[in-house]
Image (tube, rainbow, N blue to C red):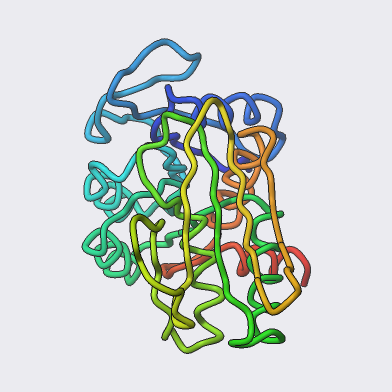
Length: 254
């Protein structure tokens, strides 16, 4: 039986990528969409979840941090899994996600790309080997329409490095003016916005007379749509809890 999916943010660019891939997917299908600005895209699209009539198994959310409560409540009420592929959530939002995970299957990741998740593991391994002898700086680049900065992926990469240091590193978002010498406790994070850049992330480990760089470049939004659909299929069979890409990869490679 095919995994039945509701796409939140169905009329946006990422929603369109998900819908296009699902047209030829043998194991999953889009049954409805939700979007603040509904239009004809080949499936029923509603302005709010309260209007949705179709039965489903999972929600793929590629909208925004706004109206988070509505989609979480709908997922809980209808016993659906939900893939949260949006970024820009506040600390309060993330607390609500954790609370809902006690009764709802939630897949939460800052980036659905397999390559980025491999990069995350490599950065953590590098930090373990290099230790405090190397300064860590992160540069992220996105298109000129992206609303949040730094990117969720940049923060995810910073967190993976900071785990090695027991969370003691301080995140410094850009630098301006006479800021003084760089402190060992810093992880610098720098955001670039321009053109149609899909997403580029670079983690620099700068030591004495030596620089190690780990980078990833997404050339199409399709890589994120592929990951979202994989996550939806994975989540459809799961009980309540919080899941991420490492759980999916562990199951696929078991």
